[in-house]
Image (cartoon, rainbow, N blue to C red):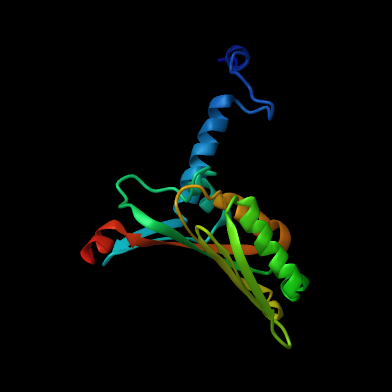
Length: 202
């Protein structure tokens, strides 16, 4: 049997497959995107136990996918119990050392993160330690943003704690990435004031 008719038939079918700008068939691109998203979602772990709800993630893209670039706040999963606030703990590894050393620089980054996330700033206080390290807090009407840096280890610990649904937390994260330039990040979301727990004391 000649392979020529078979090749011609395949070419004729392929000619009708819609392509994306990348040259890949659109169905293949959608499949690859779905598969990649599924693989990334496995990097996110959610647990609820003894009145605590924790969401852990060791991968920036996985966290962003889960967050969904939420315009209102950190997203709630289906069936998740409401809480008074969300406390996002961010680990930043392999940062630019110089960006973590000076009080004025760290203070500017955290204030910018608060402003960009549309938080309402009411006060801020920062302190530079000797020989190195900066601690500080931006008090916002919706709660607080805090940081402590270890320049010698190129590491920073950031807490973004807020209540209500008006904070654009994804924009605060973008500021941290742009200014500190971490090589790697980890995230932990703690739901604070879970409804059933709060009602026990009422």
